Length: 335
Image 1 (cartoon, helix red, strand yellow):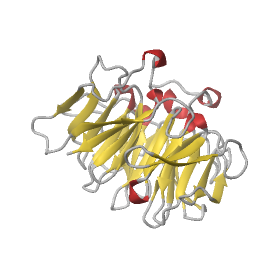
Image 2 (tube, helix red, strand yellow; image 1 turned 60 degrees about the vertical axis):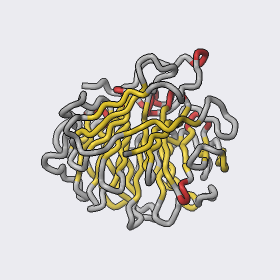
Image 3 (cartoon, helix red, strand yellow; image 1 turned 30 degrees about the vertical axis):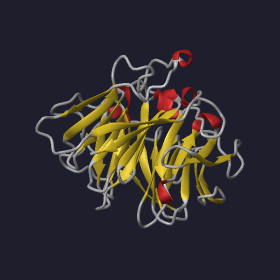
């Protein structure tokens, strides 16, 4: 069982996600371009067609336009624009699909519309941008240009309060789903931020969560939760009931090692799961039932290696994998 984490320890340099089973560090002094490093790709021989190939990287360490400091969340908006929770820089950056700088919302502070530890981003059906702030225990809604529309939350355990909001998802109906790290639950809100219901509770069994970090919605309304410290992806109904046979996804994978602290999960148009398997330093592709298809990671001697993949976002033909410790985004083609 993972040790309990104090809120104080999680306030450190880059927020929650570097605590989630990711050990070691990155020697920034020895950093070099790794876009030509040979990726290690493994595919189960009998798996359905599918897999990843490396397109490249973007981002480098720093606080300037297009530079990143401990990025922790990413979402794909209109026209393929990427909204990145640049947590260490306390801002949201908007980049093009190939990593070119478009604009930023650099708003450090605790006033409405500002950030302390922006940790995840989600795009609503109307194009609104939702930001989870792990440091301020709140969710804020913005226009695509960064104008504040709505803010809700506050520290606590009651309905509508948060203790480490770590992951976000939005539904086609405008509902907002918030994965809470310390309260071990998913809270559901309507588009105006009004509380509706709570899914999950602390524990290790069916329907129980242990430091969840991300949530994604299937087309049928069911949820996939990155149940990080239970080392699994757990499927829940919209009412929060564990789905039989899909509450322990990744605990055992035919043709691959089991998941180890998965911190991000996203779905593509065909219903396949893309998982940021953080402690295993890889991206994992699973079919809709949770069976292993393929994985991607850099070779052992790559410098720098993929060190802490924490989030994944999906566009029509590629995925974006957030490599938090290396201050960059890996771009993978999906086959």
